[in-house]
Image (cartoon, helix red, strand yellow):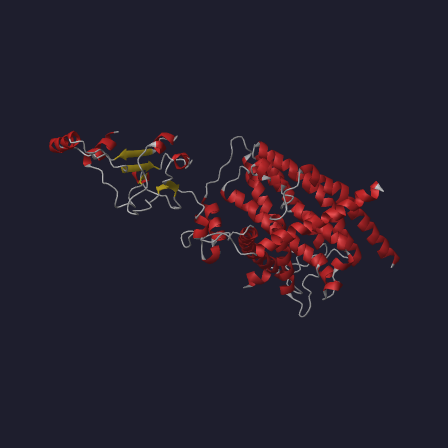
Length: 326
Length: 186
């Protein structure tokens, strides 16, 4: 027991937190895959997965079993180290992004002073993994997907940061818990009311950063077969899949904390308000994916460079000005 | 002015995004159109317009027989050559019958010699070759061929697709074993 007592309690705290995060991400990936396919089905007036279990509820498990059971291929002349490092790099940084996430008043793995910065910094590794995947697979589609990822993610990170900065300036903190505490319980006390433009910009950038339709150009199946993950089989692809959905949860969580009052809500504050808002945003993600067609690449960059960046800059300048005056 | 319009136009265009979301949202709440096949069947008002494997039309006066006159025009019209029709043979006239006919004719009476019945004894559609083009249906002069509404044209062997169209007509002539054998030889 003396041996256990020697372990710092913070380490135990973080280990337990990380295990909880892994379970949380795992469950949410399964639920989101199911929700996405059901949502797609119902929007197209078909039932979606239906045969595995009641209303196809076991379909994601069956898919996961299939993906795990498949053979892992490394293409000829591919760089095996980079090729297999990419899916790992895609998933594990995402788990780290949940560390400063303020799920509830006390439910946070680790309150980090620079939580927002940590999330934005480690989110960049996701771009790296996508780029490595495309580059290392020795495949023209993969390479094109990688090139698109880089130009898309680099471009959309700028307005995203500018939109986030507005809130940081307004609340004077980069700690997500502090930002949530700075907002009230009622919807009109949330940051979305004072920063509607920043919210919109954040949302659009979130779609682009998570490679979701209508900005899913790195994996545009109509022109690039599957883009950066063309050559991945089995769980290699499964890891990218997991990372995409985990990223969606992260982005929704950050958006909730920044703009929608986090765990605060009418009635009793708590984790449930955070989760309700996250699920609402995830539903919006799915809804949008099955509504809009994919944009062309020049349109994608035009939206960013001609609209989002100037608007985000103006918004930031306006916020700073108003903060200085009042 | 054009500068202002250039700025305002995209803001108006944003409304189209809302319209799109509204359309998919409305469809999301509508009932599904999928038929869960093995547990459900397609309603008959939908299968009425389905053009399945060809079938023979019953005779208007005798429903146990088909309307087909074995004229063979469908056989010639079929581009896939998947139709096999064997006409009923002329009845064999015995020498005694022939004698009575000749005697009657000598008396100047009008004689009705037995002729071949105008109906098929074998009517086979090789559905594995049929492309459902409908040439036979169009070509049939007495309009005795139609598309059936049969959805489940399935089989486990090639022979299962040799559809015998005379099966629903118990009143039609039965082929003799020689006819069947001749057909098989071909």
